[in-house]
Picture 1 (cartoon, rainbow, N blue to C red):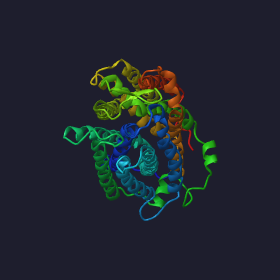
Picture 2 (cartoon, helix red, strand yellow; picture 1 turned 90 degrees about the horizontal axis):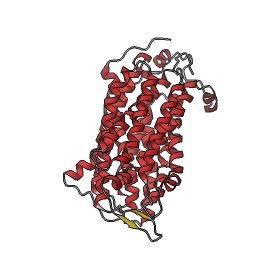
Picture 3 (cartoon, rainbow, N blue to C red; picture 1 turned 30 degrees about the horizontal axis):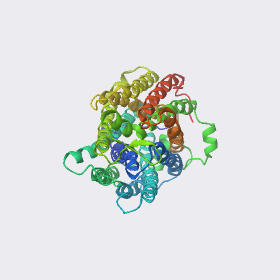
Picture 4 (tube, rainbow, N blue to C red; picture 1 turned 120 degrees about the horizontal axis):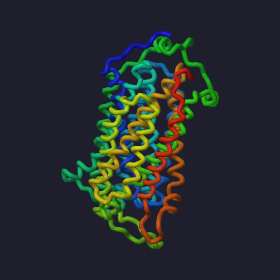
Length: 452
């Protein structure tokens, strides 16, 4: 096998730079989907069902993109064609989704339109996101892989930071942050527009700066004897997956279940805990937050700021992770800090005190972004790298699907009749799950002698 050369810092940076634009789109989605559907009239107990689509589409799209791109070679590259198609679709849908309530449709039709747009957005984001993860596996040697994924984590968090604060910034400069019942405010709509523009620029930059290895050289670097990867069934790959795949996957279950809780229930929790959002009584007697109120929409913007604080915490903690001699210890400590951050939200009634909670949540996010892919790709070799990374994405998607499917039922159990849904209790549950994940991290197999 021909040794893969070291790459300069800027080449490593360029390989992942497009992730910045992709993550802005993903951040806008994760911070605003609950807000958008609540504004359109969704019941809080049903919010988690709207979150079924993102992980479901990821679980379908990413293995397919991985498998197909493992066998793709053309003048545009190996992974690049999927980046182009995914990014182009995401740009269109980012313009449509926030306008779901602006086309004169009644509430049910508007939510159906928004669901269709969300499904397309997740399909295209996943298609565009996967190539960046795979290009690190394709083009970076084992010695530099940790640094490469750390750069990707940094760009991911930087993109998140930008995406999260857009609505707050637009509202601050005078763009309307409130709208008629059932209509998404302009501050959110314009945020999606700017995010789409940045995504275009990032894709153009990646196209100009990154050239994938040609087939012959790629095969030499990855010790592939044939001209193309052997056609192996997904079932066979799963059966022969290294134990790292499964042990990291177990930890992933608790982590991504917890973060699905955060994305789904932060808006309602912050609105009630820190902004005293008013409530309304539905005809069936249920008590819910008034999503058309200025307090609720202000809280929605503040959630973006809190997610931005989480991104800052993630960036800073990602600098501390390499200081740990044992990567499993770094993983466990990261998750414990995040778990304590989630649990502390229930004690915070001041908007600014929530900064501390979300900063520590960012520590868990840093560990989740950088460590699992480093562990997995170091245990893999050969022509099925993309397929394995796509399959590994199922360990991210399945827990989110389970969380979305069961969230309404769990929320009902944790709430009190006659009071608004206790969404903050879902965040406490998220903290407990992260701590369980930290305990499970000790069983991860880190030996690089396991190869697939």
